[in-house]
Length: 145
Image (cartoon, rainbow, N blue to C red):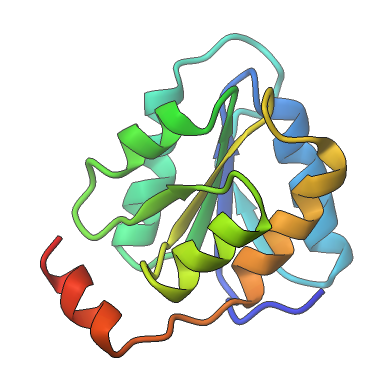
């Protein structure tokens, strides 16, 4: 797998912990660096706390992009999008993920561990990491957000 990004961070809640670990291993096996912002054990946590860690890191440009995993992906996306400059999108499938990068320049990918098949996760992550923002008319629209 190739990535257009060099600085990636990842986090989850307890429902997304196993998928977070799977994604982290997948990215590391591709010789791409990734910063894990927790949790580091599989116990109950509050997803807004971890969404905030990733969104603030991306907002401050300490990471170029982030990946968040919870049960549906929605809670993480809602929480992350509260941070200025964040465009978090739930990657439901390959096409929605691709469009989130091409048209919305999404800088955080949110995944639902209870809704997305494990066999599809690596494909979705790969698409997110390699898809470029198209710019043009989309830039004008993003500036309005």
